[in-house]
Image 1: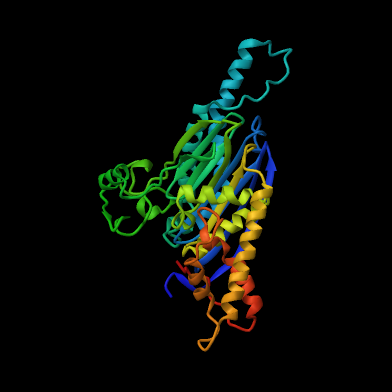
Image 2: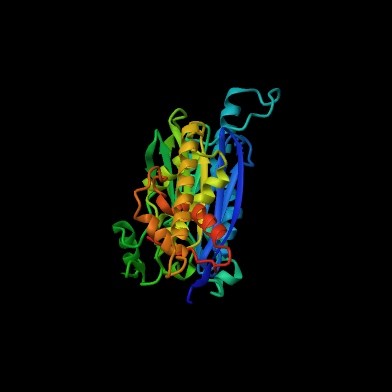
Length: 400
């Protein structure tokens, strides 16, 4: 069985919220893996002076255990805030002292950090939490060898700060197309490979020393003990890449953060087009995220899956036409399944995988872009079970 279960765990963790002009939903599923190693953060209104209109979302994809991912989901943000406000607080104090008489003035209002202070603070926050976790006894003595990627979005009233360390990914959908994507940190990337080799390591079978599939991560201290090298020069670096963009309120539609369990089976364009099509059918963001996770499972993902969807003011709205077409599609699929089961002869009733394969040869209009027939498996499965309630359930294996 190895690192996989005999049958996927399809129970989901969900959450949603809104504020600061945005709405978010999230979904995570253990899937075929023997352990759930993903974690996430979703905070609307940061708990710091002057940052009530800021928000932060992140996905952490753990490996070799969940310890690092879970700790980062609870504490990375506080390290980023502390590092970002260090310089901003000094700037605010200096400006207030220069322009007023301290004996009569009220306490100065908090000054939000500058763009450069935020970018520096994010980088410093990552390095600090990585060094802090190294002191944990189980991580220090090698009893726990876990590590985690981290991908996030920090939203200020005026800017979007995309943060990435590893091979999870964040994508911005703006003006109805993929406008921006973070870059995956893979050992084969020339810049990453050069650092690995300079630290005395090698890249074999596209992995660090033939073992680890990511070249940047938090934790993974077995790969961070090369003498004479700083924390960002090790075989695996905890340094994030930070990309800053000015917000475009009339054009920015949504940001999606996801681990590689999602990206393994869907491209940036496919996922964004699928999400857009689902937002035109439902404004329930948990439901939309659940459809993403289920679709990726049916497309063949074998990993843990987590997705966070952040909808901005210009996000797609529910369309009566889209709702009608989706209902017609569901009705058509139901009728086709009924037809296939009613025609079963001497061979007996076909199993669900056979039904799906037969449907995949049909020319079916209005299938969700990016999701295709896989995104409708739950509809097909429901009618199949209704018509054939005594048949043992087929596993949700990939049928394409």
